[in-house]
Image 1 (tube, rainbow, N blue to C red):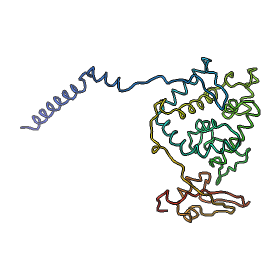
Image 2: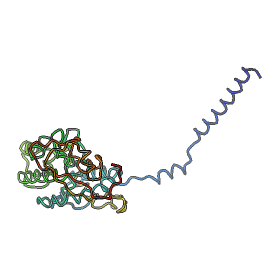
Image 3: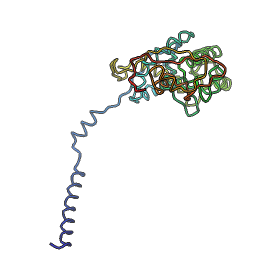
Length: 310
């Protein structure tokens, strides 16, 4: 067979195979397959509670605007399933730290859901530069006594930041007269909320104010997290206790001098630098300057929880 004949044969065979492939690709989808796909995936409206409160203050759910705004946040956070499950897992780990600190400062327990709305219980940064679980800007953090520099950033210290958040919220409550307004002011700032109260000639009632999109959604996001985290099965979240993250027991080591080598410091306690930073994210460098002799408390995990080669 000549080369040209062989090429012709290959061309014919390729054409036949292409027709077969196209025939498979163009085969009509069977009605039963469509029906099965539809039945296997459904989106449902979420239940809206008939009554609800934030920090003991009633939410006016008989107002259609208020009901719709809560519905939006319940839908968004119910159907963002992966994020929701992660929040359940983290809440089991971090709420036991946050709850007693809020109680110590006289804040209602519901404010733990504000931390969820701010950071999803992660030590992250917002696009505006707010940092930590409670998303403090540098200026606000420093105003309330947090140390923030290149080697220490106490916005990432969960205990200290929770106490500062409590003080800020108590000051806002004192100014506006309600915990709901204090929560809104945490997002927009006391000055921002006061400006809108004056501009709109309104009472100190969050639900009566016309605010920017972020702040108008803010309290409803907190309410949605409260409702969903309090009623997981009602909103389709299924898990076992073993699926949740747990708090690693730690003890604190007081340091009142500089540490020139934090990785070496970690090895003294049988852990590596990474593990020490997981428990002390407020340490921002591999060293600690401390010319003033300030007392710091570094958390060290109890033995037996991490298997590391140091």
